[in-house]
Length: 138
Image (cartoon, rainbow, N blue to C red):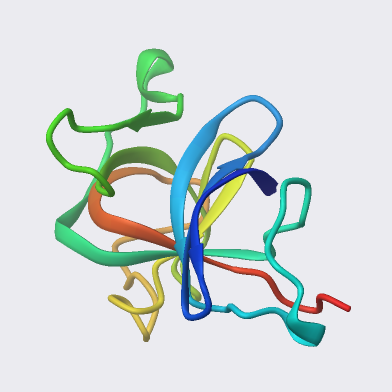
């Protein structure tokens, strides 16, 4: 995952378009400024994406061939929110894969997703925004 485009930047807030090579999401970033006063730029690696404020409840999808897919839906009148569908890759740490993005839900699920959710289950949920972090940048 890396920054495709910097949409907005000041010294305590940034917004990026982040890509996995094929798909894109808009992320808010609070891990600015970068060390040595460098500005975020296209191509920098994003090490983590967090779901901020999972809206409602995560819904486990019944598996059949047509449900075994990912989706990223951008609501028309919500500048930062998303409706997401993906596969749980770590239930105990609340991490969901959507295409080649790994979305961490730990803010809303600090103790994991619970017994009803297993690795490999497909789920859908909405988020108010996605936050990203540039770590280990030197």
